Length: 67
Image (cartoon, rainbow, N blue to C red; front, side, top):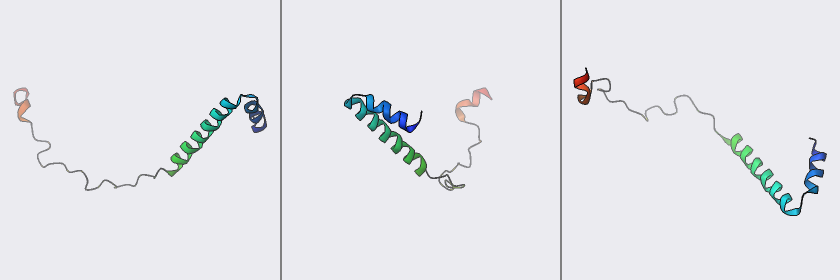
């Protein structure tokens, strides 16, 4: 649908529905703006934020009977 046709169709709506269309358009524009503002992830960003203990691979006492 072309912009002119879209404008005509919106113009045929009652004022309360025209306001809803306008609110929806503003919502879509804000959503698009937020998507474009998202920062690209950087490699190594979380480095040194997570630690794994030395005994991570050691068997757990709770599972001793199953091993």
